[in-house]
Length: 40
Image 1: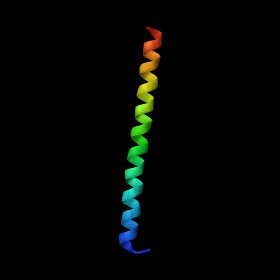
Image 2: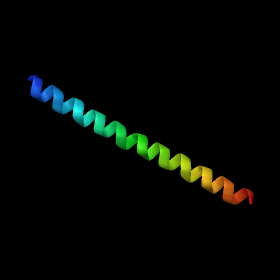
Image 3: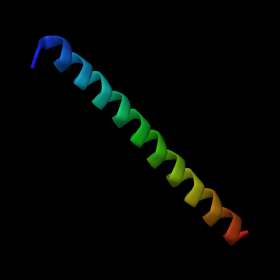
């Protein structure tokens, strides 16, 4: 694999990790707010 391909793969992996992290945070906030709403 060429160095250009390596950097492209690393860039895509990093981008995917950010997206997955954002989804996890979003779901956590959603469950948090649902829990707060049900308690009140």
